[in-house]
Image (cartoon, rainbow, N blue to C red; front, side, top):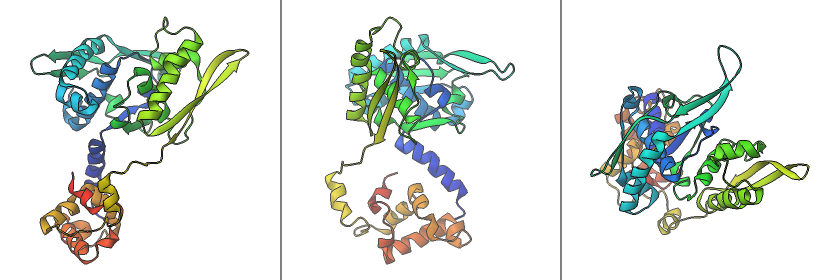
Length: 328
């Protein structure tokens, strides 16, 4: 189908619609200590940055509103205001660290990078204005092949900064369902556990790892566990194993629709046209027409063709309930 532009738009639409968090793996594997409000503010800023790509490429200002925080993380209005206010100070003082090979010398280099170069909280407006540093921008918007993405909703209910970071680290290994062995010291740094915190292993496991795993298993799309590795009698490191949960959650509407997901009864031509124009619908059914046919070349011809097909035999459109395509 001759819709290369449409399919590019579909990918951008899908990322925005699903609210995907995408980070370069250097950032995923970095060491940093951020509280929940700071991490959540970064999440919202990453999504805002993607939606305003031209703005961030020009080192522009991103606006994050308390209402977005409130709705995304299901907190009270006053809590969202307080969270953004505290995150403003916390994020300005924060930095992250990662290591890679220095291009010119070929030696191992340790990078220390600030998150933001400017951040402001506008009290009466319940809004944060921020500018990421130049070093951060390519790690969240100009992603190469080495990046990790996940849906924001998966971490929205996590109540521990350690569970958020541990989930991210595991998502880097999503295709295999198991991380490499991570040494205790490296894991502490990546999770943001301060040197003076939970020095005893039993405290570290109970207050950090076990709590984080319980949170992840309860609130996200994966079921996780860890395996500890010993050097003599001392625990030297951990491996994390996980698998994606089977989706057992079905709403009453979904159950009702499953018996007749292709019905178009009650839908008029205008609504069918809206369905046909949905980028998700295009991606799901572009194989139905030849790329050299009028419907494969012209959006209006595509819409006309799909409306007719829906009317004639909607049973060929089974990838998801037809009415789902009305929402975009």
